[in-house]
Amino acid sequence: MGRDMTGDAFESIVAAHHGEIHRYLVRATLRPGDADDLSQETFVRAYKAYRALPPDANVRAWLFTIATNLSRNHFRAEGRRRRAMAMAAAGATEQGPSWPEGEAIANQASARIDRLVSALPFKQRVAFTMRKVHELDYDSIGQSLECSAESARAHVFQALRKIRQGLDDLDGVHMER
Amino acid sequence: MKEIPTCREVERDLVAVAAGEAGAAASEGVERHVAICRECREELGRYRVLEGMVTDLRRAPMPGADPTLARAELESKLADIRSRLVSYGIFPSPLGRILIARSELGVSMVRYIDSEAAARAHMAHLAGDEDIVEDPAMVEALYRELLDYLEARNTHLRWPLDLRWAGSAFQRRVLEATTQLPYGAVASYGGIAKRIGAPESVRAVAQALRHNPLPIVIPCHRVIGSTGDLTGYAGTRIGLKQQLLTLEGVPVGGHAHRIDRNHMYVLVDPYTEYCVPSCGSISTMPLARLTLFGSRERAEAVGLSPCSSCRPDLHPLSA
Image (tube, rainbow over all chains, first blue to last red):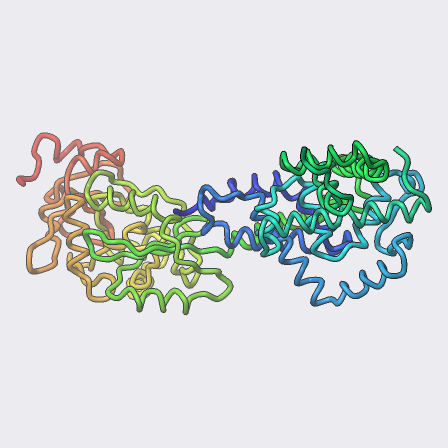
């Protein structure tokens, strides 16, 4: 079964999801500039493949899969993963050069969490982001990462443990309730 | 009484419980454990605080992450891709297998085909700047309308045209003049040449129509030789030309592939009344000045009125 390709149908998909996919890609790639490029590429690929998509497909989860694959390949190609790892090893308190933060929000909890998220390995980082920020189910996350829902969950939990540990390290003390 | 799980045993479940994703058994184990273990109770508390902070990420602004520019660039990329996309399908019809192609601008090709493989190879060969894909669903609606037309349920194909495969400006002028020929009427190649202001270019007109990328839609089957001969159509498919004209109520002599102007109502350029062929000096006029109609209904359907001297309404041609 084919899809309406007259433009309107896909227009509404772009309108509904581009902002969200872009936000996701900022976290997945760690660079807003890369998110600009890859968010465009995500929707260009989606547009080309859209006609073959079954009518009952979960379009949103499918877009996340495309975006995840693109950012994974992007990391491999750019060798940025190693740099990100190096950054993580140097200490999560180091602020990444491409991760601009205004004074006003530097101390906000969400900015601290984001800094810790950026130091996570790729799979944990994107699994965490898809689950906790974008609230995708584990089946969809597993599809994006080419693993089982159970493994996807393990990635998210592992990310949570590391972030919790990271918060302790940032504060120098255990968090108080 | 059940044993209380150890710190090590509940460690994995603490995160799940804090995230609200633990099963009943795990939840119960954690609950029983933290009731007696202060350290794990605090750990669970920290995970719960973390869950709250993480939830805030959904609403927090993202520094440096403005999608506006990327979105605008994306829209223009998609517009570019869309303009290059041509979809086609191959369908059965009363005239044999037909290929129909369209873009976002309109229908871009109608082609009679003998071999599907050859037709696909032709489309692949055509792909230059275009992104040509076989996608019958995209042209299905056009096909349905075309079937209605070929089975006489519809006399108009009011489709937007995409003339990307019409070669020259001259050919476009010929094709545009040809689209003006009404259903159930015929004119000559010389007549089309006159209409585009190039009365000497009769052969060039015939050549341009030979390469009509949109037969049926651009009704080159309504263009005939100066003697009334059907001459040619889509290569050697003159039988299809006869079939299309017969469908429209134009009488075509059986084996001769010829239209007898003495059996047609006549419009003389540039008048708005139609006549019987014996009216005045019509019988001596070159076909290039005339448009012939198979029936009064067809002439009147385009707004012509009966000639006030020969009165085709009172003295119609015998069928």
